[in-house]
Length: 182
Image (cartoon, rainbow, N blue to C red):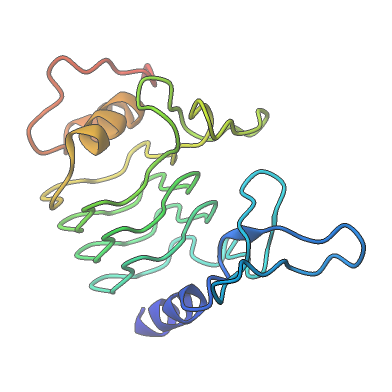
């Protein structure tokens, strides 16, 4: 677990994880003038694509602060006691993930306003302005004892997590519709 976390943090430093703009002629990444790459979430190409590398990964007690895990497949990953402060989890697959006691302060689960944010889709492209299809897939995630969960994060988990996730959300889900429907 510690080795995988070190690799993720290593790629965080030069900003290699987010999709970057490419020049139309040679396909080279475009620098942003601040030591990183210009970000292009819609059409960009990732320098490093985590893909399914972290599916079912055991990342218990790891420091993943400020990491860009967007689009990563963390299906059934064990993220218990992880420090996910300011991590980007938008469009991440967290299906069945263990997030017990994880710290989610300031972590991004979606783009756009909460009212129109929805989980990623296999068939529909993301809309980063409205938030449609930009959210993490959070069905069946275990949030028991999760730390520093904002009201917007709690709403998103309750709305899109399904019954199993809803049962583990601290503070309950009263008044929040189950938009997943199962």
